[in-house]
Structures are given as structure tokens and as C-alpha cells.
Image (cartoon, rainbow, N blue to C red; front, side, top):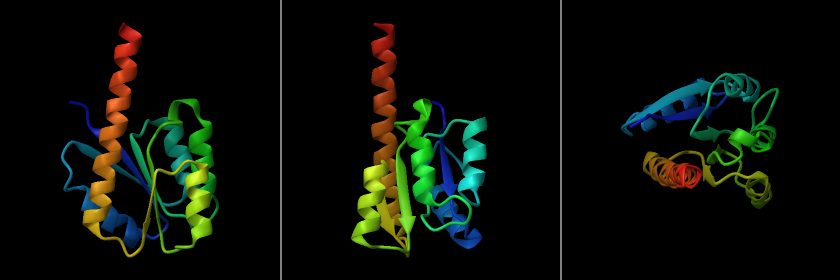
Length: 138
């Protein structure tokens, strides 16, 4: 079985490492880190990801712009996106979901909540890919 590749986009090195550490408990995953939205876009141009976890408030390109970029790429339009942010306003949540985020988790992060969201979204995403593959073959 192929590993699921997860991109963590977070400008705080400490928070990036905490999220990465929590996700290492998941089997069959590869973790890639980006320190801001610009770095994430560079990585997207070179490789494919199965799930993205992004902060909202980052220098250069914020999480909202990153979500727009991802959703505007045909190959990436269905990749699950989880927002992890200290900002917990209804407006930010609504904007994130309207741009195409699949989940919104407030900091401080409870690792169990994050792991459950990641597992559920990867399962749904992988099932969707399998169905598309079967449709193409049939």
C-alpha cells in the first residue's frame, strides 16, 4: 500500500514539529513540512500530497490564499485540507469552509482530535480515488 503524503504548513517551527510528531503515530504516512504558504506552493509544484494541514496566519501567503491556490489546481482540487489556527471567529471558519477547507481545528491542538480528523479525511479521500480508478477501468 502506498504511503499517504501529508503536508504541514505552519510558520511556527515549534507548532510544525508538534503536529508532525502527533502524526507520526499514524502508520503508512509520510510527513512533509513547509514554513509558510510560499514554501507550500513550491512543494506543490514538485510533488503530490494526499492531505494538507495549514495555519491561517502566515507571512507572504496566508492559509486562505493557500487554500485558494490548492482548490484552483485541477489535480489538487479534491485534496482534504485541515485548518489549524489560533483564530476562532465564525467569520474565519466560514471563509475557510467556503474556500474549500474540510475541517477547522482551534489551537491549542488536542492530538486525538487532529489524528481523528486526519484519519477520517484520508479514508474518505482514498475511497474517492479508488472509485475514480475503478470508473476509469470500467
